[in-house]
Length: 81
Image (cartoon, rainbow, N blue to C red; front, side):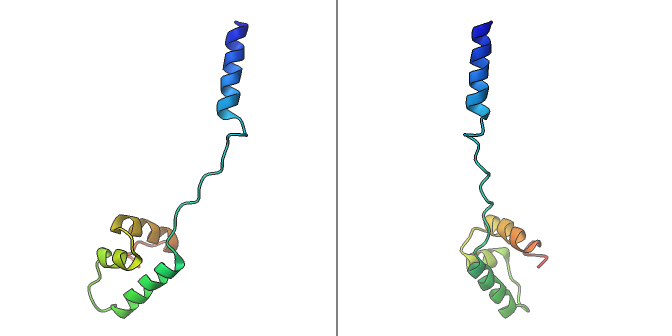
C-alpha cells in the first residue's frame, strides 16, 4: 500500500507540478501591415464585388485562416465588415 501511495504521489507531482506548467501560447493574429493592406484593398474596390478569396490573397493567407484572424482582429467577419 505504501508503494502505491508513493507511486501515485510521484505521478501526480511529475504530471501536474508547477514546474512543468507553461502559459498558453498567444492566439495568432493578422499582422497590422497585412490588415492595413486589406483595408486599403476594400476601400479601393468598395463598389465592386470582393470575395473572401481576394481578401485572403491580399493578406497572403488561406481564406480559412484569414477569416478567423480577421474576426479576432476586428470583431467582425470579413463579410460584415
